[in-house]
Amino acid sequence: MATEYFDVIIIGAGLSGIGAACHLKKDCPQKTFAILEGRQAIGGTWDLFRYPGIRSDSDMFTLGYEFKPWTKRKGIADGADIRDYIREAATEHQIEPHIRFSQTVKAARYDSQKARWTLDVKQQDGTVKQYQCHFLMSCTGYYSYEEGFTPEFAGKEEFSGDVIHPQQWPENYDYENKKVVVIGSGATAVTLVPAMTDKAAHVTMLQRSPSYVITVPQQDVMVTALRKLLPEKWAYRIIRGRNVSITLGIYRFCKGFPQAARKFLQWTVKKQLPRGFDLSHFKPKYNPWDERLCAVPDGDMFKAIQQGKASVVTDHIDRFNEKGILLKSGKQLEADTIITATGLKVQMLGNMDVSIDGQPFVPNQSMSYRGVMFENLPNMAMVFGYTNASWTLKADLISRFVCRLLNHMEATGKQQVVPINDNPNIEKRPFIDMQSGYISRIREQLPKQGSIRPWKLYQNYFLDMSLLRLASLDDPALEYSSPESAPHHASEQQPSQSMP
Image 1 (cartoon, rainbow, N blue to C red):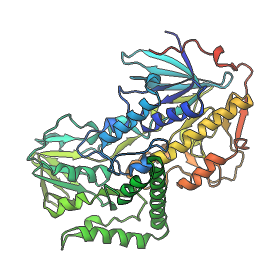
Image 2: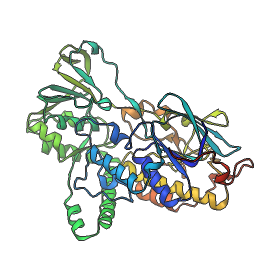
Image 3: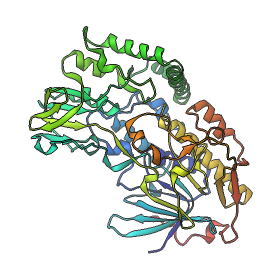
Image 4: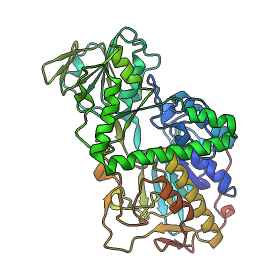
């Protein structure tokens, strides 16, 4: 089987990968590219997760692409609507012919003498095919699609009902009139609890410790007004800018004045709960935004609690038993269905093996350059969105920066670029400054960030917008080269570019 060559290969056809391809089409029309997708569908997260109520935890005016206005009424969108939105973007920009499905990248090897990546890609039939490219973009997200994270629960085999992780939700699962216990307190649990009260006899959220939650409107009055007055694109830009500002303002308020933020968030919760409700279930021990805030659209979870359809229990699990869950306090939670909304199994770069000239690349020994590339890793970018705002805001900025970089290399005749740090005094810090369990479990595996530019991550869209859009590409931290043995024209490198 012939090895196929492309100027750029994008790994992943989710929100990030489709967005990156759209930017390439627009800003680098001369570049050939392919998207390698391990599954058989576009959409990534929004195609994989199918549990009841699946929705965004960011508004779609910021989670949507900068180049494609979100036109539906709901700002907090259902998973199916987001999936359709991603597919529409792919169709509108003619991305679909470039996608190769059922292509799981197992290894990526860089040859600095040829300035070329060679990928080992597992096919659906189990065989391995090779692709080659000049530049590689990892749009694989940060978690395993194979399985979610589930702790070991003693007595699990004794339970007579169903145990389900949201990532492996059974199609058409019937929970009508069932007593449901959702283990967890994050965004997935906060989504599942009110969504399942439509048919379940009762839904209990069992949490080891509380999370901060904030009510957000499903529909925005300002959006409706602006759409009547302005063209859709202008309305989208204004709302997008406003929502980014609000989100950033809340984040900075929480980080700068944690006690005041704590009181405010707990006051908003108290207003929506029944009189006499035990507020300890919504009083986390950590400060706001040490972990991500959970959005509650139109306060739907609080309404379910007020109506007696849902409840919250804060306790530790002793063991599962035939009837449900025995807690450390001695209380028994009866259940027909137990949902383990216990988080994701985090992995970097799609869990592929990456090497440079035969030497393995170890992410935790490298710093991130502007949140785009990695120290000492040539011709590769990773799309990793914000943790304190919508993922796509950063994804769009990264994709545009990569396009600028590719065009700069072509204009200057360079084949290779690698971020190099020559400052021994830079302090290395965690790549993600959050205490969430799924981050803590793999913190030592993550790359680092530095204490100063261009190695420092700011989690600030407006600052990143100026840094990534306007920063000089003749940055001393970027080392450009053209190895003598590297082909200089695409036509010299293409054994095959035919589409299936």
